[in-house]
Image 1 (tube, rainbow, N blue to C red):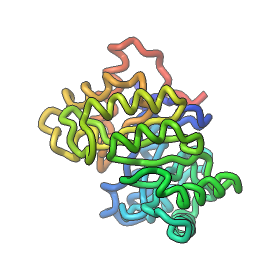
Image 2 (spheres, rainbow, N blue to C red):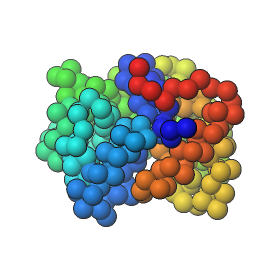
Image 3 (cartoon, rainbow, N blue to C red):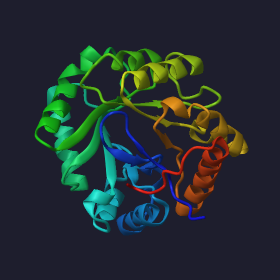
Image 4 (cartoon, helix red, strand yellow):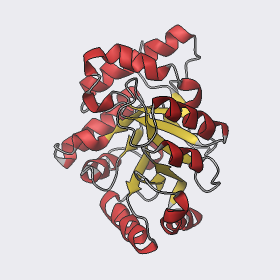
Length: 259
């Protein structure tokens, strides 16, 4: 059977994404053209067309190259900013567009938010205004704080929430694993898109890759997307096979085609 990611909708954004995301932090060592080819091949041959990056991953050049190899409508791109002020957000957004040349961003997130969300409201408003201009399709946040994730559920402008989640509860800066699970349930119930990172604890759980993925996949009822953290197509195929095998056992319908 062809090995392709299932396709899901990110919350209530109306944006269809590959359930398995290509987190591009690990391909910044490739030349732009090689990295772009890896990304394009992931989309073409394995249906992994949701590409995630940020301002400091160093992978904007690889994504920009990948975007030249496919029609823009075939790819979903997310980038992020650490900005907390109007000026910083405007500067970062300009840089993102200059480096990626994406035409538009599908998602743009305030990244690793550690404070009350009203504190970063000026930066959030910049993203909201960019959405109103058609530059961004959906706005969100990423956070390693359980309390911030819970707060995001109550803010209408936030459409997507990205958090770490893994069996060990590592990489959570405030709160614990069970608290993050509860926060995800609250966020998802509020109609937000959800995706999780650090599913393998940034490598800490590689010694039991199948078991670690199995644990986080068991929470799929309130998680839309999994950013597992592979660095090449071989690792992608390994992880995607485990994900698809889990859903096959669960009897989930096949959503591997974009319809």
